[in-house]
Length: 480
Figure 1 (cartoon, one colour):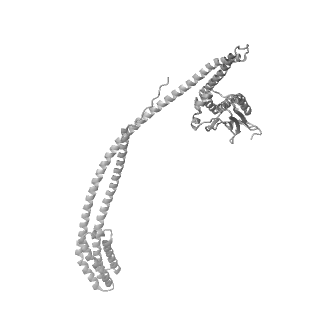
Figure 2 (cartoon, one colour):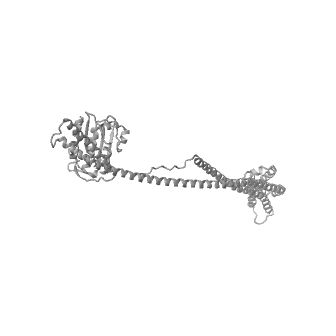
Figure 3 (cartoon, one colour):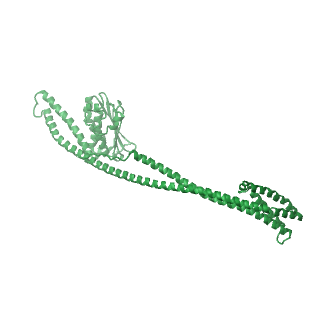
């Protein structure tokens, strides 16, 4: 007896979900802190470079301003002494350089630093007008006025003390700004160290959480593998049980059919009176009932036997080239009496020329009988059943059985191919049958590489279509 399969349960405890949430928050916080460390490091490096650059610029500008003042005065004195190699252009160029240094002190990158110190601002206010005034005096000197040159030299010497004070002040400012930058860098360094410590703690926490997650994932994977193994085992057991059921049904159907055929044979002999009259008329009526009931029971057993053989894979095709019109006529002959007795009109709508069909003749007849019997069974008195055949555009063949019967709902239509399932249970019980006709027909058409399509509307009839592939259709001359 197959064991009952009980699925394993995967871990979905609220604590596990909360742990996943905490891990997500931890990863998020760790990412933010790591980014903060990176940004802080970047700002630290930038601040250090900017501080160094600012200090160097402040000191450099101050020293160069003083040096250019001295170089200009020396060049002017050499020109006044008519030293060889010193021209008027040299004097003018040195003055232009000095003036450009003054411009940098007023409007350059470090001008804001100088303006922030009142003492330096006072010095610049004294130095700047004097240097600007040298432009006029220098022009006069270069034009031949020696006294203008002497005036420049005297004024320049008077500025030496101011330049020394200015340079010292610049150095003092540079040192102060350097110290301030160091303090800021120290604070940034502390923040950086703290952020690094927090980051490492978070990294460690994340690593621990990740290890736990990996272990949980491994456990879940192991559970899923075990569940898959259980499902595979259950599938094999279900298949074995299904094969055992099919084999049992096949064997039992054979066992039941043999004595039933004997009962039918003897009852038919009695009904026909082959060995003389039965006697009382009531006996003849009973014998007729025995024959009809036996035939119905035999039909049910045949359905079960066919279904079990198909499911067990024991049904083999015995194929031949069939005259399709003849096959349809034979199926008509077998159901015409039933249709007439119920008052159902049975018609055919076939083209003048039909192709041959490569199929199993017995199974084709059974498929047609199943569809015709179903159509007649569920069509009320006065209704109609029509059989039509046509060649499809892809070269295949379609055989349609259309009735004007009770039809089916969409829900019934979905279940109609399930074995032992009947679309309208109440009507099916009244009409009789095993509920295997359509499932068997689908299995048989699939053995022929074909399909069955079913369309229906409640109270508007049903259309069943058998579709055979083009590989089974043998077109004859004159068939379009």
